[in-house]
Length: 454
Ligand code: NDP
Image 1: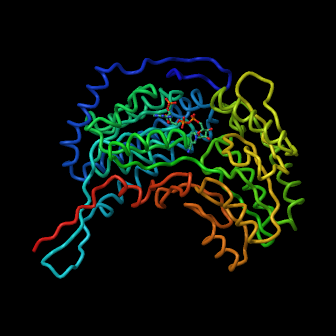
Image 2: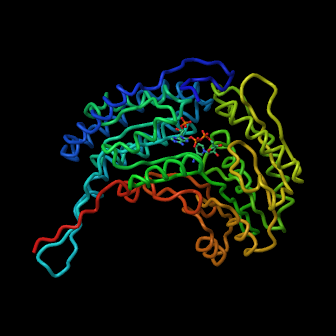
Image 3: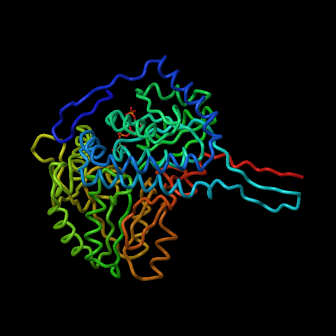
């Protein structure tokens, strides 16, 4: 795929970029390795100053950055601003907490003095997607740089200007040259970077296909990976849950970022006693959402990020109907320029169909009926993925069962699944492994060095 900014609101190509030549790539790898030698020794307080400055720059440039995201991904401006503000919050979280997370831990072993110290690993490669072109990168960048690691970013080919803006921001924030670089690479060039001895580890956010391929290469080189590979999150509504709020949040969670979020609710599992009522209200809400021009402040759902993304969602909806599914609202692309798809609710999709097992990356919800708690949990777990789950019930015993039996990295009771710099973020099963954010995310790329002084 060419490295190009294409405006999803009208399909216009705004700018194209050339991938790095072998010589330029070599220069950048050499620079990263050199930068690490000094950067790992920079006091954490000094790194925190740069990180705080980075937060301030994000806030100062919020309008321009939201514009860039809108032009490359179709993300509504309002949503883009929120993303930039969240990145600033993440920078401040790690500026404030890195010293605590990195502090040596004394462990009494009966021999003199024993402790664990946390050392950076080196140059880290981040392979990132287009759906949250800043947030996905910042949740890697902030802990990595605060730990003294150095970052290389291979961003999705559709967001080159976002990628370039991130590198520029880190330089303006005072991070030394080479501590964070964007690499414009074609897919085939990534393997060489993973295999390069100067690269210590890799983090990937994207599809299972990307995760498999990158982890296989990294595994062959004995390099650590963290994989965040999306999900098909269940949204479970039980009779004691607040139905009115659940309906509002269900629509919000399915259409967040125009439906292109790994933690968006994708499969709605509703107790049989409230199923008809839920479907009626949910379809009404989904049908009332304002789809349109991402530059308008009142737009709730913008275009999908690419023509391929739109074609894939159209194919999945057609497959769902062919398998026996019934559309309650929406169901088609909007006949205008740009990659718009209607918020859609589908019922009766057989659990034996292929599309039932797929992640739908667009504003399309499938709703299922469950006769009791056990069946709701069974359907929730009937997926290859295991990222997040949102469960609506006020029955304490049922809450406990859901929390312990749902196979996911995150369970939110009576709330929408969302990332927070203070909480670990990641999944189980086909959603990948490892964690981002919080102390757990920072420690993924640290060497827990055990030291014993006899
Ligand atoms: P991809 O997984 O293909 O892309 C994500 C990133 O991985 C991009 O930078 C991509 O770059 C890179 N990549 C992909 N394959 C390889 C490889 N073999 N070696 C090195 N880098 C690779 O996602 P798509 O954009 O194609 O989206 C497809 C589907 O993936 C979506 O519909 C959705 O289901 C899922 N997805 C999940 C996301 C999440 O948040 N977890 C985010 C985005 C997508 P390049 O294109 O240059 O190869």
